[in-house]
Length: 356
Image (cartoon, rainbow, N blue to C red; front, top):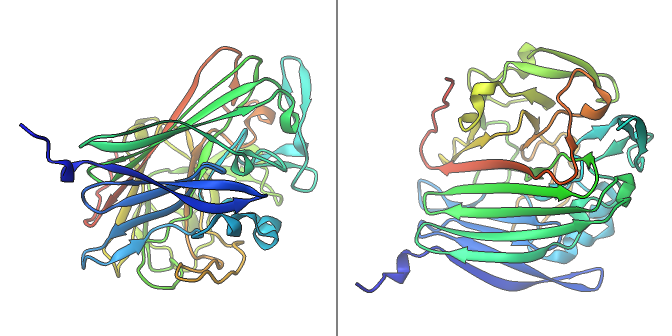
């Protein structure tokens, strides 16, 4: 029987502009439901996720730009909110830009005052990734990008090879799979940094309903550095009973319970579109950030950047783990393969959390 090609998921490419004089390419994964996910080879950045709502109106579900030049502008780079990018080698903060490893002390580049943040001055979000493979069939479309990070980059030991595979399935799931391997012991803490807004029109996400599974949180000091303590989630940050985000300020590392692996650990929904998104991961921590520090910037034909315009779900390891002996470490031993996955599940119907 001849295959019905209309049912195939697809991959298309197009030029996306210049960054530092080099040409970028945009890869767009699409399924038969009309959902599209676009990825740029610079930063392995998700530039766009489009899905139609319950009224069949296309909704842009993430913040981003429609050309590469905007990601390279001085205005954007001076603030660098890491829109849609892969973060590495080590997401989050590293206290005093140093950490113990094998009876020595690794000195990292301080790019947040005296501290280290999101991999340094030039993290994985500002690197050129190489497309290693693509695949499309009736079930999914995927693209695998790879990056080489040399020994000593931003202070990290070891030659590190990293891959990220983005897969859009026929049933509107976006899977993000990381793997990495180093020739020396090093630190690793990768995540995806998309900013989600499921509403149709220009607005904040204050009316989005948010549900979070975790009941524990990493305690931080005035500089947002972990103290080493883990506590019960305070009432202001407790979304175990789903409620509108409203005026909440969220920039916290939630500790995921062991039974959350492969179960839904977070969910948002927008009342005007009916769109929902749920998150699954095998990472032990999920940083949730509703963009209070996002700089203001108007973007033609896209949702504007502004404080509280979106929310990030960043599954990862424990923040500042190398400096916190009570935390599970983020050390990648030489020759060992690091693996981690995230699944973002999009739907036009409520997505019920699984709690056991």
